[in-house]
Amino acid sequence: MLFSDLGILGKENMLTTAPNNLAVWEGSCILIPCKISLTYKNVRVDNFFLIWYFDPKYEDNLKDYTGIMLYNGSTISENYLTPTSPHFLDRVRFVGNLNSRNCSLKISHLQKNDSGTYGARLYGFVGNNRHLDMWFAPAAVNVNVSPPKPKIESRIAQIQEQRPVTVTCWVFYHCPDEPIMLTFSGLEESRMSSQKTTNRDGKVQTVLSFTPTWEDHGKTLTCTLKSHNGAEISWSTMTLDVKCEYSGGMKLGYVGEIWKKIFCLNFREGEKLSLACTVISSNPEVTYQWYWKDMRKYEWTSPIKEFESVGEQDSGVYRCTAENTVGSGSSELTINVQCEFLCWAGE
Picture 1: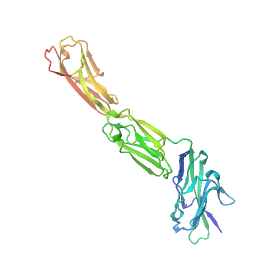
Picture 2: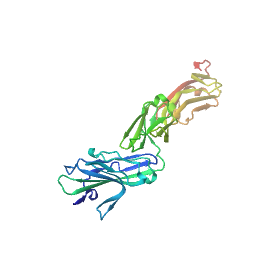
Picture 3: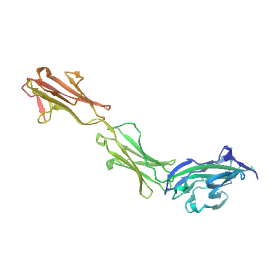
Picture 4: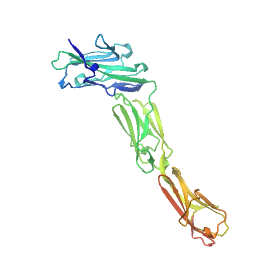
């Protein structure tokens, strides 16, 4: 009987293990995905058998692989061999179906020394060919001592108030038989109900959509990774940096015994006067600019403008603007010097 190792020659391969570089953690499980093509060079292949190895090595004298056998089965027999090593006993299960061309392998209760290369070896006859063809597909498994922390990401570079935002939390995971959970916390319960979790291509991801307000700035979002039985495994946090124009309103008024929001002020010549331009909260911080009679006062950049002694020349309309990268706002009042009546005032 003649042999042809198509996996070694790097030609068309009937075996596929994808993804074939898998990171897991101790105590978890892994499903190494494996598929068998329907045809080879447009010729259907039906009768074949498969062997899974741990730490496979190619032997030149045998023209084949050897290693710790984890599974040995075929499409023409219901009999199969289980692991030959006590190390894997009761922890390895063939979860595929060769007749359905699924050759996936599951390993449970992973240990650190399970790290290494796993290989699927396929044997079969192509059409009426008397050659026994062989294919090989490896998969690398890295078992970490500790589980990973989930990754939290925002789909937009800058979170801004009143603009919907989507935050994702994800982790690589390769054992759908024992599903894990990723859940967000940190906002009001009513705003956390939009969480949706998916598990595709070895990646578990939870998506949270919400509309931030300025009050969310500085809050901490937590994404918690839980096992299939609800036990907490690890978590990650994200501090919300919500950009806002300014919050709580903007006020320009007179600083006296009682702060008042005033639209018109009257002073006697020589009196001391302090004007305050107040923004309760903003992110990023605002910069201030003062205007007098619609003329920009470049030297006035503080939120408080003080007059040691007002004169008639200080009369007029004063306007203060507060601005950051998100937006701007302004407020104004009128100062009358040597005017004895009060135009309007309110608490």
